[in-house]
Amino acid sequence: MNPFKNKNVMITGHTGFKGSWLTAWLHMLGANITAVSKDVPTIPAHYDLLKSFIQNDITADITKYSQIHTIIKDCKPNYIFHLAAQPIVLTSYEDPYLTFQSNSIGTLNILESLRIINPNCTTVIITSDKCYENLEKRIKYKENDRLGGKDPYSASKACAEIMITAYCKSFFKNKNSNVRLASSRAGNVIGGGDWAKHRIIPDCIRAWSSNREVEIRNSQSTRPWQHVLEPLSGYLTLAYHLDTSDRLNGESFNFGPDSNKEHSVGELVNEVAKQWANAEWTNATEESGKLYEANLLNLDCNKALEKLNWKPLLDFEETSAWTGKWYNVYYNESKESAMKVTQEQVEEYSGFLKFFQ
Image (cartoon, rainbow, N blue to C red; front, side, top):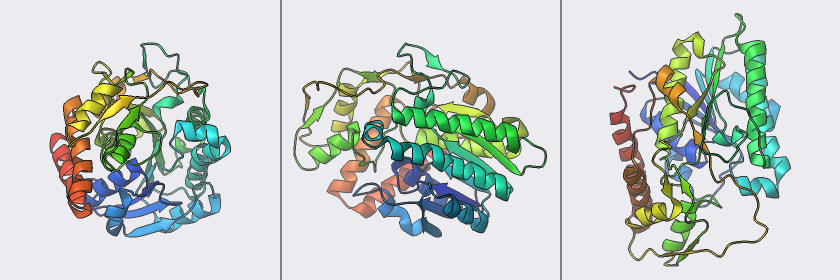
């Protein structure tokens, strides 16, 4: 079953890491894509390899209501996936105003446009696992746990979630509304095509591709790692079920890795390094006055399993190998070959999913 074939699908943030992979996947599913981003956030970018797939590639600012309203009105989407955001915690300390504008007001502009236009549309808004009030304890956060945020990024995502709840309860669950909307909360992901600042794998790739040793912060910290295709499969599955069931309208879902299979940062770097010749790293000197970043945050994904039949499918070794292979092909073969790897990995992952069969 393929609910996206020949459907109008709007993606915000398609030039970013997750957004570019989602664009590639929806193109392969035969969707008519309208994609919206303000700019290309990194050089190089995964987006550069697949922009020819996009039927309607629009440069617009998610913080400008009039622009977003016009785009939604004109493209008449059957589905919207809202990923546009300022995605980096450390950057949110450098520019908190921009972070709240992008992540909170940007989401508000989507919500208000949907309220006014009232299209027959299924919308999935992507926020973050960091929207929860993180107690830094070995607990798994459920969708009804308290929202919070000790840093501007986390707080901006919690604000977005509060607005989503208000709009759903006040407007979209009304019998006169044609809008079906849910939010999804996923954590940090890895995979080919990410060159963002302040991220472990991109830092490694930048160094190794220049034959340099990379310094790794907090190499002993353990986290449950997840390939980018895992939460994307959750977003697509959620959109399908949301489109066919009013019971999910206004709900939130966690899409995270198996928290019982944590691995250290050092273990991740070693696994990805297996795909590279002469890949070396060392522990970075601990910084004084370090800004707060969550060290421990796990999600309870039982709701997604029970209501959507969704669960993560790739193990740690597969996740690391797929990531390392993509970059190896990009730097040591060609960009065209890297795009083929993107398509091959999407196809292989899709083969694991009952939803797309």
